[in-house]
Image: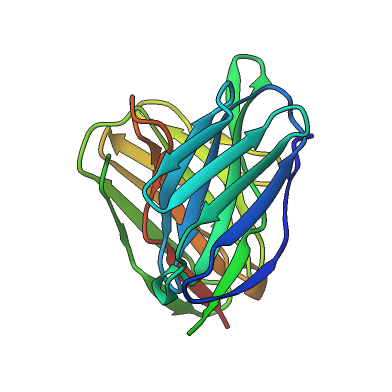
Length: 114
Length: 114
């Protein structure tokens, strides 16, 4: 079945760049997403990338996709204390019988040190 | 993207009782999704709710335990029945951002069963 893996923790200093990595196993992925979950809150869609793209940039966020290695990364430039949250990688892929499935990783907890 | 109002935001419930969680969307959507996030885990899809038909449950989830209602295109409820401490989780509803990519999530219901 589909599997999405992320490292569980990342700690960076304020002002540095953060890079959160994700690997997935399903080659039929169509979209890959990054969500942010702040303490006590729901999930906020940060950005997404279509599977035929290599890179997407949106202000401080850069998403890189290596489809050959099934590796996705999220880079946050100039990391701020407000970026402290759990970041979830999610894969949207065909799951058979005409249906699609969204599979989440376990999330990477980003801690920003002032 | 759609805006979801989910309530209650949190509750502490006695073992053996039931809790109904509500999600209201500010636009009409065909499918609504219910997820569970157990402590320290990623999101797991419970079921997909379509208006006018019975919900489709994922493996490991059954209608008797998690009955779902979908009376119209903007509203859905999930009931957690006959609760036990193992049901303590965050429950989230979600809808697809039609044409915009990604999914919008409610703010979640943090359930603690004692």
